[in-house]
Image 1 (cartoon, one colour):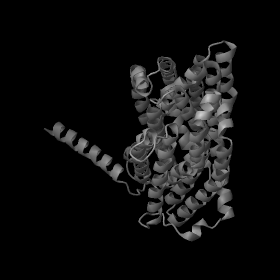
Image 2 (cartoon, helix red, strand yellow):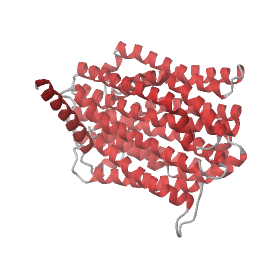
Image 3 (tube, one colour):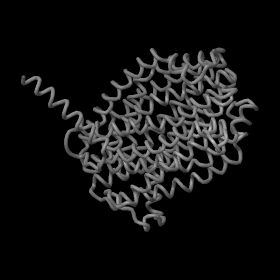
Image 4 (cartoon, one colour):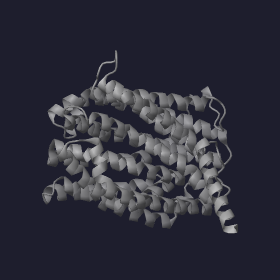
Length: 474
């Protein structure tokens, strides 16, 4: 009876934690159980990242059933590859915001935390304006440069123009969610993606296939639906920032440029942005290499596999984000040992998750791919890519946690150097040699991905154990 009672109590406690994590609220993560803290942060963060990956999958599903789907899938995939530069900027700046906001919250200074968040929004908006304009003007040229055929580039130009032109919504979704995460309120970040994805799922079939007075826009309709969804998600975020019911009290005066604050944020954000730009440019190069060695079907297969990989990887990234908030808040409270223990606990949970994902990927690759395209040639490439890339999932999971730990501490240079060596000096040359030098084609590119990611994770473990991240001041 006592064992039964204990089991019931444990289950009750577990479901209570889940309920609390989904309801939200700002929590002090410098006290209490570390395991409980990781779970409270990880659940909404994982759901948030799952929902972020759903955007591309929803687009991919509907356009994959259009006429000449290889063009449509290629356009969506290559546009998403280019948008990874926007994602990199957004993630990099949001990591700086998370690190500073979390540190100020740990120091019990919510006014300074709110101001840091608003100054980060100013930085992001200014940078994004330039990139959006470039995407609008040079959309066709960018797609051709990425390896798309002329036909695919022409078909995908309106899609890319809309996606790049509205990329401020991508930037703000990531950034404002980073601010909420730094404050310890991961649930609002999750719910903003609920809003955005719900709208996108409803509108995608309507704008792609048409309904009543709304004409069928085809591929372009996917971009229209996604833009409206993301825009309403940002509106939800802004409402919660401005309603005065959170620890972060937003004031109009906080949007006046504070050049000292902007400089401090930029010093953290610049290497954080650079580390993700390095990774993104590597993925762009790999996409171009697959397109030139595998043709339209090879490129479409790789892009299908990549979207599925991101669907599985982003929840792990969400779980690893818990390390960023926990490290930032606990270093702010001068609890260095607790910060380190939080990273180790988060890494253990992520390894367990990635073991499950590895099994699912190997067993279900053909089923997952067939859901998105009926083309047998595309399916064959996609299945091969998934099975090869999933070999390194466990190391991916460890590496993600360590990167977020470094960034949460404000030590953004360490993962930047690791990425530079791992991606540009190792992964890209390896992919080129295997695919072209050894004439392995797209398979050579697929092999280079888990090999490089595993090496990066091993380097991260060594640098984490050295402990220099514990001494960083922000």
